[in-house]
Length: 137
Image (cartoon, rainbow, N blue to C red; front, side, top):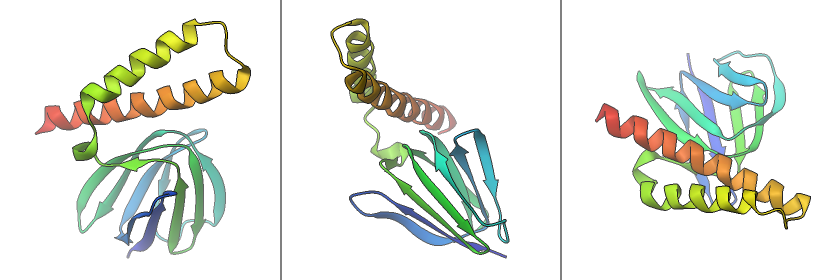
């Protein structure tokens, strides 16, 4: 039994295919989704999304977004979806350092602080995924 998983970013449909299940970073923790899941709509935190397709697990980094679940369909709308192969570790580590320095500066509006924190969260997720995948290769 399978369900359709669709991951959409502002730029493109990142993934669309039949999967056996998925684990997504929900707002209150990891959310396991299988076929015939109860319908729901919820928000998603930056984190790692893992799905199983043809018996093989694949993990990607995702940003904030929304999850819509129906009986046989999961739609993910997110501002970031990237595989470990597309992550530039040095660039993300530099982005983390810049974000941390920016947060130390008290001359920011609350909106600017929120934007820097969101950027920092995404970079931390990407670095974590890249490092884990590099260790497993």
